Length: 503
Ligand code: C2E
Ligand code: CA
Ligand code: CA
Image (cartoon, rainbow, N blue to C red; front, side):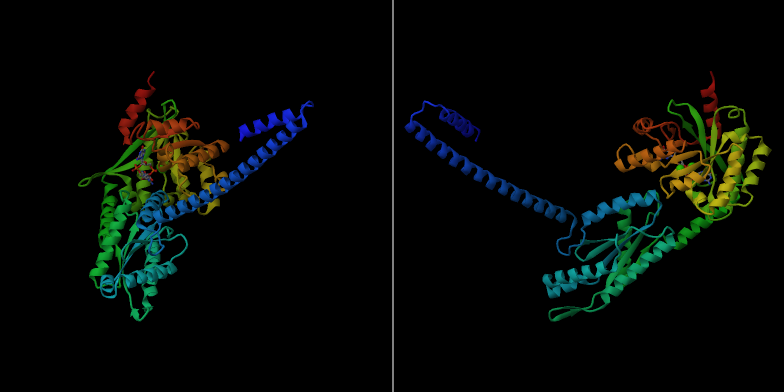
């Protein structure tokens, strides 16, 4: 095309010569007309090529969409497939752990479906599955995930359940009932009529910190098998038998009541360091030296203690120990604060403020070495009374730290009304921040909020140099995590603190 237009230019140049003979001029004009026709032709081909190109692109888009569909859709029923369910499960699982939510997996399997397939043929079987899929879809709410796992096995993930376990279990049982109900009407296909029932297995999760998505599917399947074994048409909820759980709780509660007066609790401290590595504080974390079970971490007994006044007794013990520590030579006079976790139930005691004051006076501990860690659960109800209590303590020089920040629903407006000095970023965000853009953004937002409101930030669960680096690049953050020290017996922490602060 470029050659052709150059050629045209040359010819036009020649035409402009005055001393050209008429014959030559006519020849030239002929040539020019010919060149113009060629140019037009080329132009047309180009337009056609362009049209073809956009058609190809369109086809490609459709093909890609089709492929995407194929990877998450079950070809027969149009429901999600196993692959997609696995992905969603993994995703929702992390969220459930992080936000302490309940989720369930319901597995449903058509009773004696193989018989139908064998006697009526696969085509009828397939048609039945499509109808079942439709009926199941009708039972769900928006956000629920329905998948066909294989053959006549369906799974439903309910990601949005009540916080409270019993309420969540109840909601799930209700969905299971609706599934049974939806199948009750006879199904007519051509000449034949079918009455289907399903066996259902349910697993609630997470149950244990160490649970994986696979554990949940396995539990739902175990429960499903039990429904089948019982004759079908039933629902079984997988549970580590309620008796067993209740028994364990009862034993822990009974032993813990004795453990406090028997001196089996241990005060552990985990150092908090500034970006230069200097110890600026510590968090008090309780442990239980059980005579038979060995050293027990708080995850095993704090939640049980929190269900009764045991947590108050336990909190008193921890607070008393921390006061002794603060009044000791090791801490007193140093720029160091000890953080104590305060349970909601404890904070809500009408005499909480008076009690704190008394303890401080009795031990001779200075309030300026004390930080109280509260969660949003503590501050969320009865705000005016909470503000009054916090202000009274803050006026004495006690600091407040908002624990597990990022996992709850605090609004800025809310935060502004409270005398909070510090935000603690929950360890799940800290740990994933370098690799997960969502968590990175969340951490950055928390840092921005803290800066705006002039709050200190403590990052919990810093385990790697990469995580520490990520934080240091973004703000002035205090680190708490295995990278700088695990929770250690109080005596060990004191010697660490003393040795570090020697000239
Ligand atoms: P928390 O207040 O969020 O405490 C932080 C938890 O993170 C501690 O678990 C600590 O050992 C752990 N941790 C610290 N650094 C790292 C790290 O780098 N990696 C990992 N994976 N974990 C880290 P711990 O000691 O098991 O305590 C669990 C929870 O028990 C605490 O969570 C707190 O809610 C409660 N708790 C502990 N002591 C007390 C107490 O004296 N009173 C009350 N009311 N609750 C307490
Ligand atoms: Ca804490
Ligand atoms: Ca925390």
